[in-house]
Image 1 (cartoon, rainbow, N blue to C red):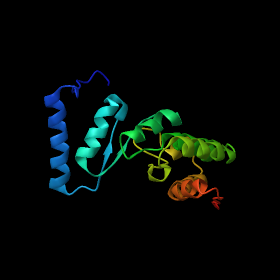
Image 2: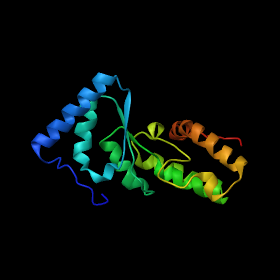
Image 3: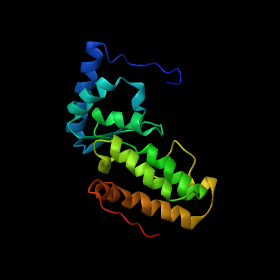
Image 4: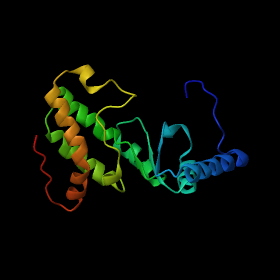
Length: 168
């Protein structure tokens, strides 16, 4: 990535050193979970071992809007940042697209992810332009934040074939 040197997880010594390191780090600092950056830059098989060695909740960043591509990583770590939903939030609240966009996005996410309720839903982060940078409507920003806080309950509700109603 960005011409930076990389570690070769295929090398037994490197792999074992990383797995022992994360196990010791979690124990030493009594960590509850790990947020892992740029997950696609490392082989998927390694993340399963890493997550198991850590023994805590792992959530990874896969900066991509393709639901199926991002969802596959939940086979290796507990959860991902929900970039597919992030792009829909940005579209609906930031660009005033129809809220019906969420209906198809929810169906897509529920169909592809093993457990959508544990995904990291967000409106802003350090890798993207901030919401209020692209448009300054404070009410739409607040609505997007409330939506992000409540949406994981909708994934659980939709899985039970019920309706989830969010009032803004």
